[in-house]
Length: 332
Image 1 (spheres, one colour):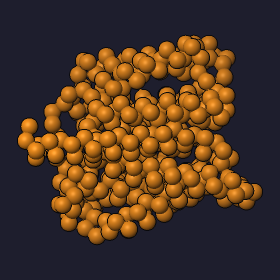
Image 2 (image 1 turned 90 degrees about the vertical axis):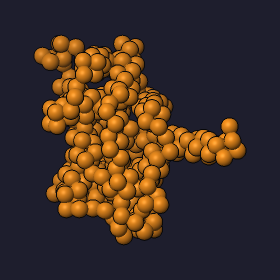
Image 3 (image 1 turned 120 degrees about the horizontal axis):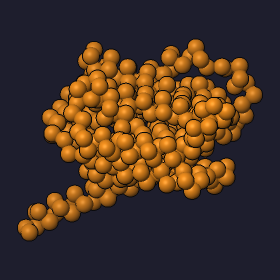
């Protein structure tokens, strides 16, 4: 091995270590999101409204500081796709946060992690993407795990806890909306993901304005506003920046594995803060979902053409190339 190749290999290893640390930090932050939502004491619509408001301020400030508004790369088509993805992602958050109230952070988070399977199924249904027998098998295994995790029994549909069933349904609907947002965002190329995410949260401000109850916020104390600001500044601003920086440095396999730091941390936080934990039978479903998700995410497929860098960003092509603003199975 020549000195040059050794240097390049060392630099690549350092980049991957940095990316690993960044993505791990982002997923740990993501795992604390449920606590911020619950502790804010606000309704799901109010929580999401202030998340997108503070998140837009955080992301907009970062993008402006980096000078990325110049040569942004948006066309009318890609801007429309980003806005449509924003509609899906904003209501995905609303339903997920409602699910926290009706089930628990642990159960809602694990059920929500059926997202990759919706991406595959919706891709086959809407865009005729190839659906192999192997993927169908892994999806079936994942939904068997979902049944175990949810803890639902046939009797629940006749005389059981309707609120709990509603919460499971809300988590599944959130995952479906996330899948739709991912499919839409995957079709945007030549735009930095930070800009796509900024458009998505900006769309949420007028979209949620009719649903927000500002009268209910009058009694919110400093602590409540602190939790809400954290959702925007930390879980939308800082977390997105960490994730997108990490994606440019890491292979897909490592991204897929590290993504499961998020549900693991969420379950630990739910137990440590609220004393909630899933039962033994429910726990048996978790490895089924995790294994199936990894198999589906890492399944070999035909290589896609590389996304073109945004104008005036040729010197930073790996960072500028568009990645989904809603990375599958990781971000909430």
